[in-house]
Length: 187
Ligand SMILES: C[S@@+](CC[C@H](N)C(=O)[O-])C[C@H]1O[C@@H](n2cnc3c(N)ncnc32)[C@H](O)[C@@H]1O
Image 1 (cartoon, rainbow, N blue to C red):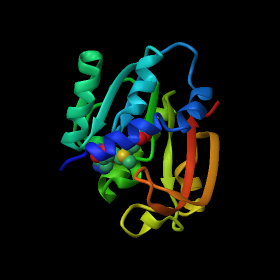
Image 2 (cartoon, helix red, strand yellow):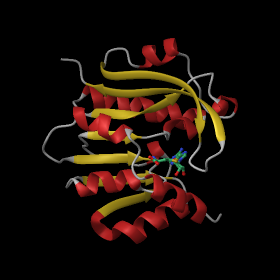
Image 3 (spheres, rainbow, N blue to C red):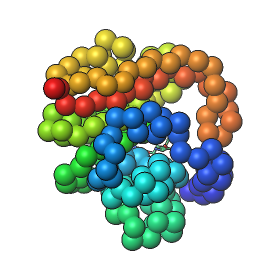
């Protein structure tokens, strides 16, 4: 598939504004982060620019080739499903507009890995989508109650539910129903 339009559009937009939110909850010292579903890789750039060690996991070959062409051996890139890779010891798990694209089994396997790592001290930042999102028809969508249940036993550092008419990265009109989440270990 030719992703050049996506890369061009994503490059113009730069890192998602959510990184600035997540940044409030990660330590001042750079550590090791896993970027799940990095897409055009602007999130990888966010961490690299701040001195972080980055492991990127994306199932798409075009995304992986593009990231390797930009970051070379400064980042470890794995072309695989999220849960298929051993992320090792990470301080942060970032999955920015990425998790809900996974198939059902992959999604829950990944969520369970995230929960274990967060319980052990890591910070998770990312999005889930709700039933009001246009993508709910063919992606994993969860109610607010389900999301709250998924976060039980973890420290919810940031939770924002957003419903709005907006656009996709390609500029197409879309109804968004998004849960922005930052999770950490319980005190
Ligand atoms: C919307 S893009 C991600 C956007 C990016 N994180 C950002 O901040 O701009 C979603 C990415 O997730 C990847 N993806 C979807 N399902 C996946 C899975 N199960 N395992 C690994 N990567 C997956 C896709 O290949 C795509 O690159």
